[in-house]
Image (tube, rainbow, N blue to C red; front, side):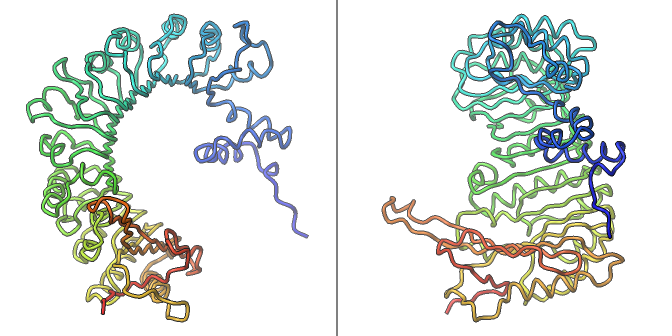
Amino acid sequence: MMAQLSLEGLCPEILALIFEELYKIQPEIFGTLKTLSRNLNVLATPFRYRRIVLQAGFFQVSGEVESSSALSIICLHSRHLVVKYDLGNWGAVEKLLLQCMQLQDLTWYLQNDASPLPVEIARALSSRLPPLPIHLHVRGRPSSWAQQTNVADSFSTLNLRSLNIQLYAQARNFKQFNKLLVGSRDLESLTLLAPFNFLLGHPIGRLPPIRELILMSYGWSYSETEVSQIWDFSKLLYLEIGRVSLIKFFSTLPMVTLSNLRELHISITKENIRSAVGDHPSTWSQATKQLERLFNVVRQLEVVDITCDVRQLSLHGIAQNRNLRLLRLRDITEFHHSTIVVDQQSVVSVADLELLSQGCPLITELDLGYPYIGDSEYLDFLAVFPKFQNLQLLSLRRYIPWPSQRTTTNQVDISLASAKFASLSLQTGRNAPFPTMKFIVKMRASHYDLRQPLHLQETAMDIVREIVFGHQGTILKDKTEGDPTNQRVLITMNPVVSS
């Protein structure tokens, strides 16, 4: 009889490795794990108290830190301390900061018109050597921050490592943020979600050489001269762009300043497509050509996750990045509101795929457009993927027009049949099978609301079918979402010709 498997049958060293990986994806589970047994409690407790969020009730009303064994455990194991609330009892927080000797960083949320940094906290932080790294999050509608000069004064003297600014109202005075940025010479990460009149850096001075820049929403309106005077991208490794004009952003940058870039993310959605790339194929092409200028310079990319006009993009530059591990290319038409442009979706050419397989041998994940099963290049397109010997996850997606008539359950499921055919074809020529293959097919339909003004009556909705195959060709998932009629839709990969 086979012995029952148990976590407690593993040695502590193996369990520690498992817990490290588990902590990355589900840190909250350790509160339960530590209650299962004494042995697991010993191993799970350091993970349970690794990150502490201070909230109401954590301290006694009297202001004294609770002298409990639980607090002693927290001080012993805590590495990351987060303050999201105006606790008021800052003396108790000061004691906690001084007692947590393994503390690695402090995350501070500054919301609305809250006081920047209590004197007790500043005193505790100044006494720690080496200085504790600070991650500052600025949130809300700061109506009075324009008059508060001590925001910059409080934090620029500390070891500020990341600044996350998310403002939801127009502001008139940015000098305090400029002063904070210019004074924080050890700043590594900057995230901005701000009104379009929010402009950093000018005319205060040059910002520090950050390693990570996330522009969730930002009115980039600098000239080339201002960019060179204000921004320093010489150490930039990670760049993510959302609701920002790609043409304005990249046309003002000397691309050589991004030569150290490791990860590039261009996040275009239905909501931000106009702000990012405009509403016409001509501006889509301009934005894509700016990206191509970047790819012709950068040679150390490891992750490329972008949306662009695939027809206008050559992969020659991307294929020069031999350390590339992930490539995700989404076509702009996938996010456009029109139901007409869906039929214009393009895919990467077979020649470019060949170039990519030769130049980027370390790729483990690909997410690309998928040709129609009747296209002349269909089989040649599939034949390239077995050449990516390290590929672990392949996602192929296709947009098709809404059919003139709904398919019925007694018709041939062409979508599933073609996916099965493709999955079998992809296994040919590989030393090892693909662990996971994903086929995503979407139909776009128009929904009319006659109660709305004429120009707002038509809205587009997407129906998505996702079919996932395991490494032995077994179907792990076959799910359709977004069907307004609540019926299963058999999405065909063939072109649909309206009668």
